Each structure stands twice: as structure tokens, then as C-alpha cells.
Image 1 (cartoon, one colour):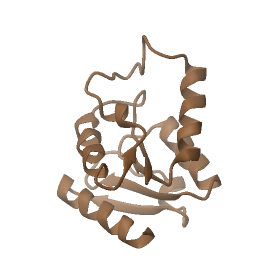
Image 2 (image 1 turned 120 degrees about the vertical axis):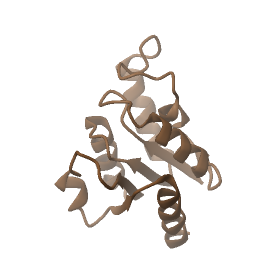
Image 3 (image 1 turned 90 degrees about the vertical axis):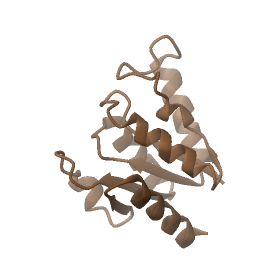
Length: 140
């Protein structure tokens, strides 16, 4: 199983520890193509000294195509994550969007109102992991 994990990079890195925990948990289900999203060294400026934006776009689109599922942590609003979810939906991927309860930012209506997405609202990491387990139980 190939898993595409989406989380905010340039939109804000305040949840990078959560992303890292979720990525580590997802590894029990398969190969996480986007492990770097959880990296503590990645900043809001993105992969600064690394690849160009064109390269990142092409690489990430290829990874979404290769992925069997997409898991997106959507608490921190991100244009990139929203775009990735839309592209994955076009490719008819199974998609789980995780949103942390109590966030001062309201979940986008374009995500929350989309009947093609599985939305999981969680309070802590244990809740998020349970939602991930339920998601995989449904699709496997």
C-alpha cells in the first residue's frame, strides 16, 4: 500500500510534530511517500535549498498518482493541501481528512461539505490513530 500524507508546509509548520507522529503510525499500513512532511527541519519556506517549485509539483503529482490512498491533516489551512486533495479526488483516490477539534480555524466548507471525502475530527493523537484504523478497515 502506498500512502500520500498531506500536511501544511508553507501554510504553517505549527503541527509538524503531529504530522510526524501520524506518518510514523501510517507506516504500519504501507509506504508513506511523503515522509518529509513531518520533518522538524522543514520550515514554512518549504524545501528552500532543495528542488525547484516545478520539480516539487511534478514529484508530488507523480506520488499522488502512485498512491493508493491520501491522508491529509487539514487543521492548518494550506493551499497546497487543498490542491492535493482536489487532484486526488479527481483520480478517485480514497481520502481521509483529519481535523483537530478545538482549532481556532474553521474547517473549509469545500472540504467539510464534500461527500467524496471521509472527514475525521479528533482531539488527540490516539483519536486520530483510531480514525486512521477505521478508515483502513473500511477500504481494505
